Image 1 (tube, one colour):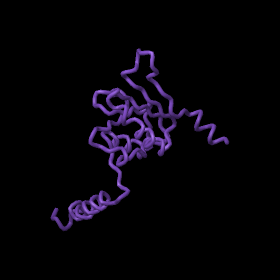
Image 2 (tube, rainbow, N blue to C red):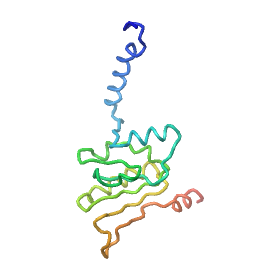
Image 3 (cartoon, rainbow, N blue to C red):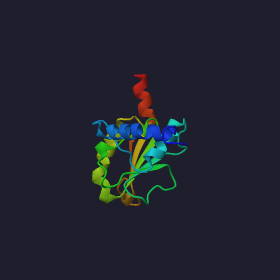
Image 4 (cartoon, rainbow, N blue to C red):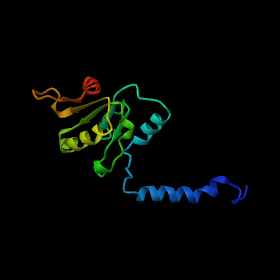
Length: 145
């Protein structure tokens, strides 16, 4: 097949241009690690069977559907839309505690079905490790009123 009749080669410049223009758009949001996988799942009409884990480290939450927000990714520049309507748990260590508030605020904007945080370092201490930010009951109460 020649270059002039191959639809993939004919459309390649347009796709590249559209992708570049999207990245230049001030509303463009990046995906954290594994975010694209969850987005595709949602676009295909599927939802995870378990809570989605949000972590700041690669070695946390590997057995669950998850996203990993690395240090070089500013939370304000991330897309969390695929978490809408899902149960989400932010799992973190003390060294990342300063990042949790911004992540909670960003995820709350997309309206998860529930949102909790779990501080691994506090487990087994006298301090609470688990915090319920939003429960399904909270959502139902708002919808009824």
